[in-house]
Image 1: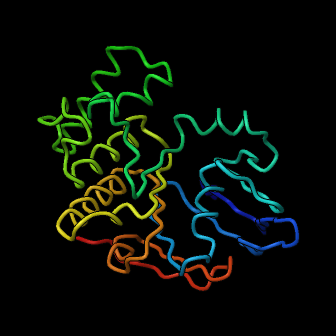
Image 2: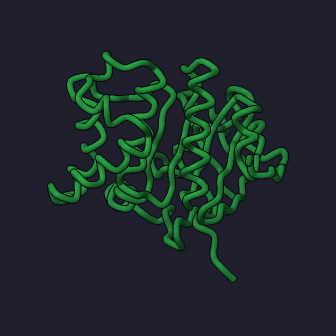
Length: 232
């Protein structure tokens, strides 16, 4: 039987202040298969962002186990998690998080520089994703010269240029109008169809319908799973 790419087993996450302990995740268990498109919904404070940060190895669980590609993330220190995250995990944010001083091309190229990819290969991979996302004609533009939809395309290109095993999208259409939202979701659907494991936090039931599976969080626990038909 094929092992899941991700396995969370009885995960808890606590946040502490001087006088208060709050539980962000409460005995959460979840398996995610390689190539799956999963959407995570739930009200504010339900644990969505905490879960995404743990999946992305930015944060760690207080109790429980997290296996990524059968590797025990819960046993790793920060340096080990950072090393594993590079090239395996990418993020797409609601606020784009592009670097204003870099062109679209340079923003997309940046993670490849961090990974030490050689110049010729960098050029080929950046140009390929620019063409795939129909942004080649904007490659020399700076973020402030691009529309919101174009900036999100650049952010998606930056996320996938490393060819990661998993992409985590946090409200990827949250700052976009309906037309650009549809375009971005079509791009994410295409990435999923090409085999990328995609995990998306969203408040939009419409966006969530693109996923093949939904989970809903409430008070740090999974309320329900819903199988979704792939959009044609």
